[in-house]
Amino acid sequence: MHLFLWGVLPYLAAVLLVAGTVWRYRYDKFGWTTRSSQIYESRLLNIASPAFHYGILFVLVGHLMGLFVPASWTAGAGLDEHAYHLFSLFGGTAAGALAVAGIAVLIYRRRTDTPVFRATTRNDKLMYAVLLAAIVLGMWAKLAHSTPSEGYDYRETIAPWARSLFTLRPEVSLMEAVPLTFQLHAVIGLILFALVPFTRLIHMFSAPVQYLFRPYVVYRSRGAAPRKEKRGWERVDS
Image: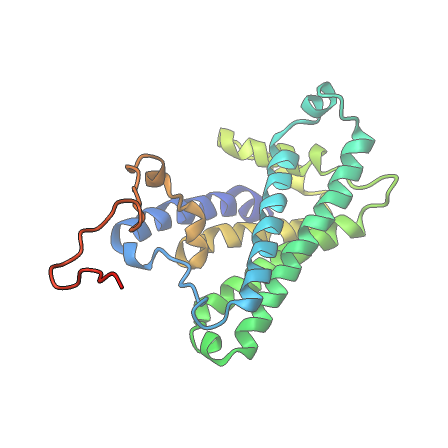
């Protein structure tokens, strides 16, 4: 099981992520959407959606920095270990709390607004459950093993293991001494990656690149040039 979780599951998740995304693009282009429900309710959506997206963006950037930027690089940039720990603890917690708050309001909106609830699929419910579990477990793992003065240094275990996956020689032994909460967070995160192509989360790979190259759209005001009046409708001076 240990070998499967840290030496096989990451590659299964990567295969499902890549193959599922390619399949979705080739055979389900019309389904490549968030299935927006803004037409049914927009007040709560305008609050929750930005909160969730900004929160999850900061969470993602924090994970990329923590897993794939070695400690020697941050130290060379002038960020010592204690400063990095405080940034990770408070910054990561704030980002996670923002994302969780956004998800909570989105779930409340879907549950209390009848048209939005009717537009919610089982796939959406699974996506919300796994996404929320991944974020909450990550916050729990960090807070349960950290104080303002010190904390569990995942850059000595989890980060080297994550980087070793790209060399196709996963160092599974590094995950043996990792606290259980961090292990659960990693497993749920891998499951989330595998689910991305089959949920509305697929829209994260969409970018309006064509807008950068499309021609300008020129708008002319009706009052920009005088219009010739039709015969029979001439102005009559008094």
